[in-house]
Image 1 (tube, one colour):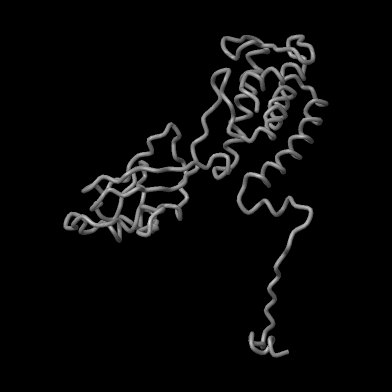
Image 2: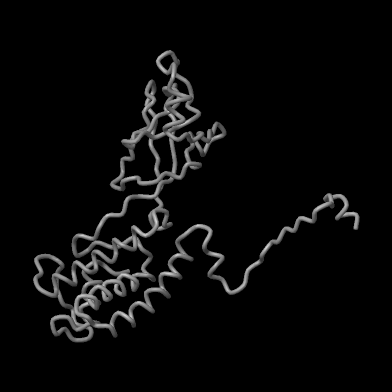
Length: 247
């Protein structure tokens, strides 16, 4: 697992930026750099951010949420962690999921929630919530004010945060950190008109991106296996299931 500083050092060493030798630990910090070293710091930052933003549902951005409801309130408690929710897993909202009284909350789009659930809300008594929706500001609402303290759990995909200080580590799995170097090197090649750098790094980048997508996108993992079981269902017009079994 490489820190922000180590990624910059790898880029600088590999490309010989500023006369750096192979294996050199230049720069010693990402802060207050100038010239080509400043460029290297920013190329790594931009490359990592571009990869994190490529898909909003990367598995490495998936984060668990757990908060307690407030009796008499229909507001969904805000996530207390440092991560900012970007996209919620709509099927993952549960009240007291680990108990025999577990309730899976129904998700509504805000337009439908405000049209179907909101009217007459002021007359409702406290009850166990059964549905949930988020408005355009990111505030969540239950269909009813909670009648007890429940543990609300869910999963969300967080908003990526750009690398900032030496010790920052990208959430991208460590085995794919080479992708960051490849994209940063392509940025270097574009600035320096170094076609050979661009061509070499593009080939490696595309290869590794394909592997990252297979590893970190749901439903894509089977595309990256050498062998797999494939279930094929064939419908034959004019034959019922019982007819086929009889034959």
